[in-house]
Structure formats: structure tokens, C-alpha cells
Length: 92
Length: 398
Image (cartoon, each protein chain N blue to C red):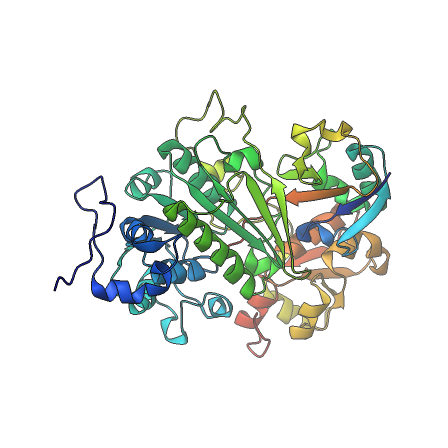
């Protein structure tokens, strides 16, 4: 399944400055795995050493938080968009 | 002829509430009054509303201006900071002659000129677990315009404990987020982000930069959401996370669900009072995240002495190319993010001094290189900013 992954601004520096990338994946977890294979430095910002998704990073399949779907096992379809949404705090 | 106009529906509640508008107010807000979504009833709701702004900076500026313009009867401004020259790029309530003044006083002055009829209270204080509940309790709506994670969690928790809506906005470089937390049956900040990122991972505006107009847009969205809540008009952002990408000029919306297991606002909350938010966020004492790295350092003066003496030192600049254009020490430029890939450009037999703007990124570079086996490596303490202060003022500060 061809899926677009949107990379948020704070993480673009670790992904060759790209705003998004296309991957072929059957599940969200698969797509994230491919993303971190393509951009190795993203791994530690997205995942803990035990391989769990960090809790200040949320992942959405289209407009739904994967925590309320099947988390990383959530299946993907052609044309889906995965958004990575980290905590940002700037305001002043 | 009567000079006061009676509203169609009398305001219930506390005796201090206004129930009329003067003719002057009717004229000032005429563009509101002629809209059925506002009308006299809505304008009176605005007049009787009490909104507390946490932060009077980039987000707080358009917020304060638009809420004052709309006639919100009571505005509270919380900020302990003073106006700095670098603020003027985006904090549009301030002018050049406000530099050095407390932000709350400068904002109060500006907002009063825009609308002398409203009440503006200033709280020139840092928001803490000790004062938050007391500060918040007399206001109806809290608007989060802060710039750090500990305060955002503090604002969230205080709002949930007091049952007050929290109009949230945040920015980074070219991206913004906005939503409304704390509505009945709605999510809170912890539903979205149960834990903060480790300090130093997500840069502040001073470190990451921000396009000045971005907080103008996001802060205006927060003002809009606040006014809609007061009027009870339209669909609020509660339950939706609005994402704004300024470069692509795209707005996206993601569903924001209440987490029924949330320790703060869930079905069985375990957090029932305010905590130490700096400890929660792994930051001790300082307002901004400080590097915990212990790396060998050299001061700018010592570096200058050694260079004058003719010591063979290799200067490594780990900033970004656009920063090098602003000012530089003629170092070898390898941006921090590229260091792992380009470490072969460095000769570990030479003594290397790494620098960045303020000493934080270069401390990470030194830590990384030491772990990679480099033994003769020092961090320039305070970065090129300190070099400008202590050695060569001709080097621009930014």
C-alpha cells in the first residue's frame, strides 16, 4: 500500500529536510519502520530503546490517532496519510 | 429620551455583572451588534467575560489586542518577563520604547489605548504550582500562550482541577497547533501528550527560530476560539487538533479524543493536585532547558589567548549554514545533524574546539565526538555569543 508519511518540522533536520516521504507498507508500524530505515537518525527521536513509540509523539492515520485504532498494527490503504505530530511548546 | 438600551434578556448571576451597554459602547461595537450571532446579548456576554492570558509574548500579543478590541470586560495578563529587543520581530503589542519594561505593564498600556473601557489586570509573576489555582479561580477562560512544557502542563492541570476551558496554541518555526482543552467531557493536554519530550530535544524559539507572523496567526485563532466560547457561537476546536503549516499554507485537522484512562481528566483521575512540573519535564530550576552534559570546556578568553600564542587549534562550527552567514569564527562548518555522517572530516590527532551559538549544540557535538573516541576536544563555553561579549564585540550577536 502506498502511504505518505508527513514529517513534522522539528524532525525534518533528521530526515534530510524532507517534508514528507512515500513508503509502501501494510500497517502503520511497517510504515514507521521503513521511515526509520530510510532516515536512521529519526529512530531515537520516535522510539525508545525498547522500540516503543515515544509518548510525546503522536501518530495519526489520516485524521485518527492510532492509539484509538490498532496502534502500530493499524492496517493502511493506498493513498493513506500518516502524520507524526510531536509536542511543540513555542509561544513567546 | 433614555440614553441606555436595555438588553432583551437580563443577565443572571453575580450582582457585579453588567446588564447594559452605554451608547458609546454600542457605537464602538456596532459591527458586532449588527450580526445576529453576537447582537446585544453577545456583546454583553463579552463585557461580562473574564479571560486570563498566560504569556504576553508572540501568541499573547494578537490575543490581547483582539480580545481588548472585542470588548472582553476583564483581561488578566500573566508574564514575569521584560521586553527585549529580539521580541519586537513578533510581539506586536510592544514598541521600541518599551524595551526593558515589564511585558505586563507595556501590554496593559497598549491594550488600554485600544480600549479604555475594559479592565486589564497585570500579574507580573511567574506562574507556579503555588499560585496557579488562586490566579485562575476568578477567571472564566484561560488562554495558554506560554513557551515551555512545564508551564503548559501546569496550565492544563490547573484548568482541569478548576473546571475551566484552556484555549491552547503553540508554534515552532513555521508550524502551529491550536485546540481547546478542558471542556466538559472533552480531552485535556495530557490526553494528547501524556508525557513531555526530554529537555533539549525540541528547541525554543530562541534556538529554533520562528517566523514572526506565525504566532500572529495562531494567537488570532486562539482569540477567535475564546470569543466563540464566550458567545456560545460556532463549533469550537474542542476535540479537534488544528495543525497549521505556514510554508505550505495548509490547515489540517486531526481528531483529538478524550483518553478515558487519562490520569488528569479521565474516568478515574490519579492526579488530584498540582505537581512539580519542572521535575515532571526533567528540567531543574531553569526556565529554559539547560544541557546536562558535562563536557570539557574552554572560555572565549582562554581560546583567544591560545590562538594568539600560536597554538594549533581546529575550530569546528556546528551551526547551520545560514547562521555561518550572520557571523563566524572562520571555523570548519559541520552542522550538528550532519556530524555523524561527516565525522571523517575531522582529524582526531588535532586539538578541536567546537562552538555553536550559545554552547548547547556544541556540547552535544563534543559529547558525541568523545564517545566516538576523540580525546582532544573542547566546547567553547557560551558559544559565539560569549565570544562577542568577552573577546570581540565586532562579531554580531543574533
